[in-house]
Length: 132
Image (cartoon, rainbow, N blue to C red; front, side, top):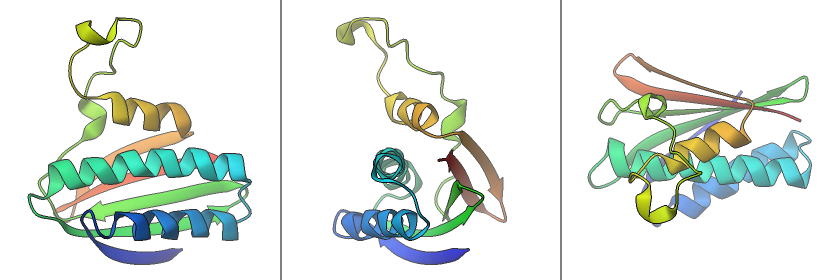
């Protein structure tokens, strides 16, 4: 498993995304899979930036690939926040009738094979996997 910590803010967002994409490519993911993973991870990092910290904060990103399954773990010390508790949006409703929020994690759940959350050792730990 490889790991890198970023101070997450608008300036470091692209560096974190480049790191994730590079790890995926180095692990043998095809470009379609890399695209799906980076879309999902972009939503996750946006959530961490929005909910975990007020003015940016550290996020550790761990990546591992085994048997054509890419696993990415996000750890932050911000406010506890379980995005999986949010009810999925009703995407059949017109935009003006939908409740605000929840679309990002909905996209993550649709693009990734598995998504899990735990709060452990005073850290938010969100784990996503993608079979390819």
